[in-house]
Image (cartoon, rainbow, N blue to C red; front, side, top):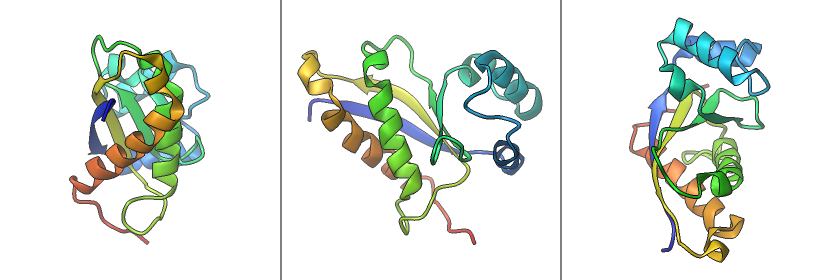
Length: 145
């Protein structure tokens, strides 16, 4: 009730998923070189590609969280909680509790409570997970074998 997250789920290119699995694009890469790789090979915007928060599940999978917001306060305070919610959501997807694959979650806007006590992990992780599951379900997901 105090915190609101606005996200959009966008499918990732199959070739990009293969490159992430192969280690050509990973979380431990330098953000500038990773952004250049994504811009050159997959037509990503460079500034958006630099704002990748994490990969998942387990920090190496072919799903990403991207901060697409502009001028939102306290984003650095909730980043770890949103990443934890993403890891949980990508490990146990909304359809059959299976791993997600090939999803880019874009955080467009966040409304947070002014009091810091209401911005802790207990108040951010569950809504982040529910928001990611809901945004994925609105995008017509499918099961793959």
